[in-house]
Image (cartoon, rainbow, N blue to C red; front, side):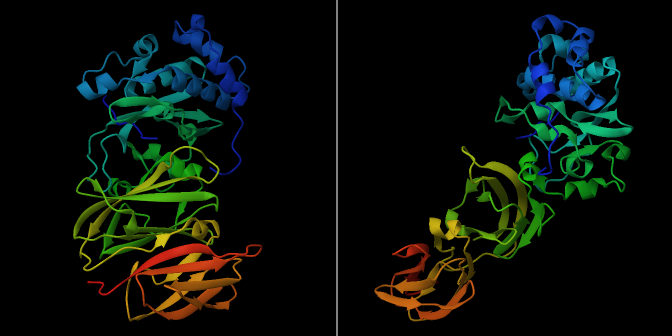
Length: 409
């Protein structure tokens, strides 16, 4: 079977470090047969969970995805024995080898065929009825658990397989697994109330890091968004998770001025503008503040924008102090402010003692009520900035920048 591949729980996680080290240290001499490999892997296992984990961890480190076979449609032997010998396969080989090793270890296991939102899936597209993926279920402690060693091994970037261990696909909770895996038999969803294919199809495209970062939906829990020039998406998430967003239209990434991301109590608020009518894709990325490296994809939506926006559009430029202080902009949201008109400024700036709007040489101190600052300013110049004074500092920090213009048309 040719199958799609994934691109790449804040509750206390089980510690598998001991069993993982044993699996990763497997000598070449024990890998000549399913029986000898299985016997080695489960030697230190104290439970059926650790048996399944040892098999999963060895496979994700030692079996590579057969990209050549996948893209040519001509896969090599995907039997358990063939996969073990070649050390590469598509999802059928991963599923068959996991089943064989787990059975040899005395576990009850099945291979599950179904559809997965992997390589080639575009958010919002119709879900085909034919299966394109295999994964496994293993019975542990009287309950079936879901495992996908293929997606646990890594992901595709273009035509290249990136071997990157993804722990999410070991004993994944059914309510999370069903975001991207739909079995042919509904019983293998392992849900009290199984989803229909239509319900599966409208779930957003979610990557494993969505769950790893502790993100959850507040708004827009379906993959399709209907917009009239703009939309606002909210998630719950820990305060140390930060986001960036891409808006794609006609295969081009649009300007960042069309996106405004701000932290709100308990989560994040993402504002997006869509200049023209038509179809867009919204890709949302995240990482922790202390993480190095690139942001990681967490969720994607398909946007049907039914009306364009006229005139100059965009959000104000955000300075680092805005994010660092946990500030929230209420108004005005538009970057372009007409000269000669009065604008009401409203912000929530925690810990600030003063907030001022600076228009040219004129400073207007906003009124303060708790953490909220507000006041009217008549726009008079091309550059209008919002500054805040924080305790312990002698000078103001920039928060936002607007542009005054003769016309916003």
